[in-house]
Image (cartoon, rainbow, N blue to C red):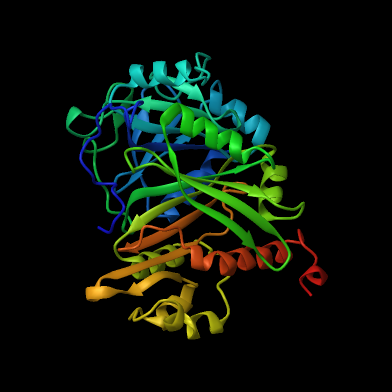
Amino acid sequence: MGPFPHDAPRSTISEANPAGTDGFEFVEFAHPDPAVLDTLFRTMGYTPVARHRTKAITLYRQGRINYILNAEPESHAAGFVARHGPCAPAMAWRVVDAQHALERAVGMGATAYDGPGKTLDVPAVVGIGGSLLYFVDTYGEDGSCYAREFEWLGEADPVPEGVGFYYLDHLTHNVVRGNMDTWYKFYHDVFNFREIRFFDIKGRMTGLTSRALTSPCGKIRIPINESTDDNSQIEEYLKEYKGEGIQHIAVGTERIYDATDALAANGLEFMPGPPDTYYEMSHRRVHGHDEPVERMKQHGILIDGEGVVGGGHTKILLQIFSRTVIGPIFFEFIQRKGDDGFGEGNFKALFESIEEDQIRRGVLSPEAAK
């Protein structure tokens, strides 16, 4: 299963984990035309497994990844759509005790959300860009947080295989220049997140910096991205989204080639792949890897990591990215083979791939690349 502790033992509240965080529960999405999201989720291998008993809210699942499609007219999500268009208006974390997590968060300066139109009747605070951060403490052996308000469409609490993705690895935030440290402070002070990586990424024309954070439980990871210029993909996101928010969601599998084949067959489009030289040089960058280069090239799968290290231990990360599919939001699909990074060695290749996509869409001028 790799080094990422998505299947680690249940958390406890402690000095190191004062809010009792224990992983992601769901990410919520909304759209002016909800049918677009229904089609997208099915394309990516998700199955609708439950519907809210009184609201136009549907739960989609693949493995243990939960996406909520909120089409309820009188909801926080509807207000978010009015401001942002296609969007991710909320996420939920698993915590040991939801009321304790709320009290801890508010006591450390977070703002409780007591307004109308919540997706679940559970504690919530205001998060990135005015989105909501829900706290749920009914999960795993304790049952399902959806059971009281949702009706299962088939078997209760199923785990559909989909195309093979089974856990939510991380999600990212894009923030206004100058706010990266503000949001670091929010996650650090309120929830005791710590920084595990710092990146300063430069493409041919644009750049960004990023602070990658992880929760005390190790199951919630959030890189925070900030632009270093006026034309980067971060600035484009902020303009299109009309504010800060979730940029992409990364999900993990143990068979990325088959999963990517299935996504492509379903019609999902990926970011442009790197040039052939990227693959020709892959053995220099990732020592001793035996990944099928032609299959990687077929869809543009990227490879990173130390490769085969002492004692034959493998440290490899495979990753591929969709095009933007929910407004400026996109998805990342990964397989970890002993590597717990974010594909640092691929950042330049990915960044330039996104620049090519910006040129294709007319956001950047081709002359700027020369």
